[in-house]
Length: 297
Image (cartoon, rainbow, N blue to C red; front, side, top):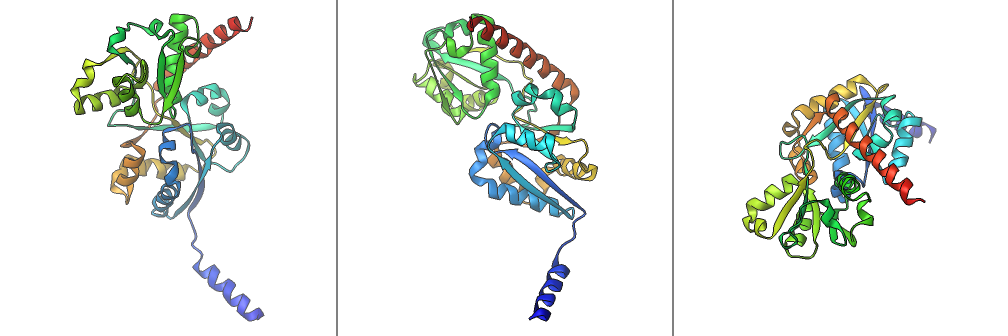
């Protein structure tokens, strides 16, 4: 019996693959565009692992439901080499993250690195600005808190109140195309969507312009989420990641995954882009603090 156990151990050792690199990436299963794919997490993990194996590397994927948990794991332990989080949450914790992080990245949609958000309204309202939100219904994307942040900031600027204190009712949809259709059919007064979705839907149905107006637009400076590596993580792993990202479509199953996740490329985020967004978020947090302080009295 002892000989059999020794034989089994020897066989396992002989068949065990040696990896050049071993790494673990952390993803939020909600709060980013990856939430659209949470039912396919197994397929996504297998795809990532297969790509890593092409470079004789082992890559594990861990999913988190709480953004505070993933940040805690990243900042206090040596478990995660890279994480993906919502952009507003990054700026809330920028100082802590920047001290230990490097190689920031995101994804582009329809060959566009940056996203512009628009406030849309039923044409009958003849809405001209965020002041017209008062006592109206608005619909937002439940998976995108970036567009909600932009809306909230503009509401504070125009109304001296956060948007939830201005509108009569807010509700949420998973798809931006559904948001546009609900405004189109008069089920909501206002909505916030990306310019990309507006353009796509307008191509499919030009009559949308007859019943829906664009009231306001953000700057074209946002991206769907932000990922980054720990500074002390293996540089070879980072190089492999960006090598794969540079020509992602040539790798097996990539087009199917990219189609499901609704992106077409991975890109490094330049420092100038982060500086522009930092200004946006710092202004928002200052405005929010000022309004919240006033309302607390």
